[in-house]
Image (cartoon, rainbow, N blue to C red; front, top):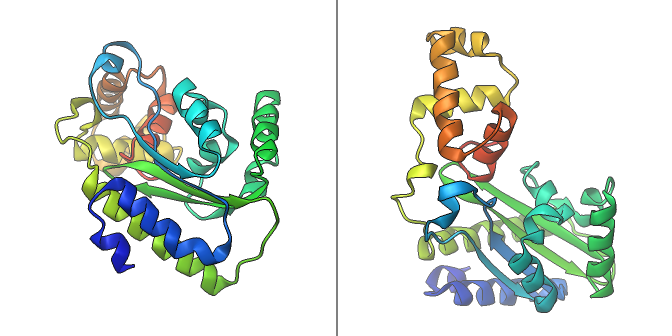
Length: 236
C-alpha cells in the first residue's frame, strides 16, 4: 500500500499495484480513466482525454484505445459505466451484440477469458475501470475481494493526484443546481416533479437541462444524463 502512495509517476503507481496483486496470478491487468468522445468544437480542444495502462495483451488494448473501440465495443467498459460494484467478466458477457461477440472472441484468443472488473465512479472525477484477468477461472473469498478493492481505490486515488485533469475544462463545469437537476432526471423524475422537489419552476428545470445539453453537445435528456455519468459529474 505504501508503495502505491509513494509512487511519483503514473507508471510507477501501476507497477506497484501489479506487484501487490501478483499473488492472485492475473496475467492481464488494465487500468484506465476513460471519457466518451466529444463532438463538434469540443473535440478540437487540446485536453488530455484519458490515461490507460496495461500489462498483458498490450497490442490488443493499444489497438482498441487508438481506434476508439474500447469505449464503444468493449462489454467490460460499457458494463462498468452502468454499475458501481465489482463484477466478473462473465456478467458483462450475458447479452452481447454481434460486434461485441467478435470483440470478446478476439480478447479470448489473447488468453483473456476469466476476470474481474472494479468500476471507479466519483463525482467531479472522470470514471475509471480496473480490469484483471487470466486464462483459467478463479474464486475469491470476501476477504480477498475487499483487499483487492482497497488496492484498486488506492491506486486510482494516487493516479488522480498525479494526472488530475485541468480545472479549466469549461464544458465539464456545471453548477450545483444543474447537478441536482441531472441527478433527479437520472432517477426518472419529470420536469414538473423536479421543479416541485427543488422549489423552482418547470421552465427553470427545462432551461438548466438545455444549458447543460448545449455545453455537452448532447441530443436529448437521456444522452445528457448518460454523458454526465461518464464524465463523473453525477453518480449513477
